[in-house]
Image (cartoon, rainbow, N blue to C red; front, side):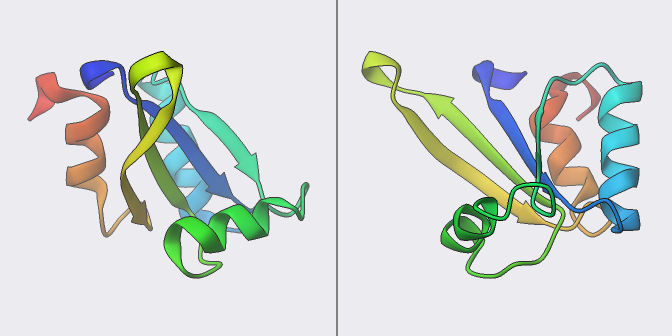
Length: 95
């Protein structure tokens, strides 16, 4: 991933946009951590803290800083609406 960005994807199993995002990432061998908000209700707090709401899918891009501390670089809510920007971050060769 560009500059070794780490991607966390907050999803719910009933969200079709979430499923489309996971299919795209998997089909393109893009590493991400799936955070199923329905499976782990404590993730609702993280989701709301990052994005200000509970809407999924939410893409959170992190970069490791000094001493391994992670810093949130960018976040997006929704796959279709933000597809081009997300693809640019996960696969800079396609931009």
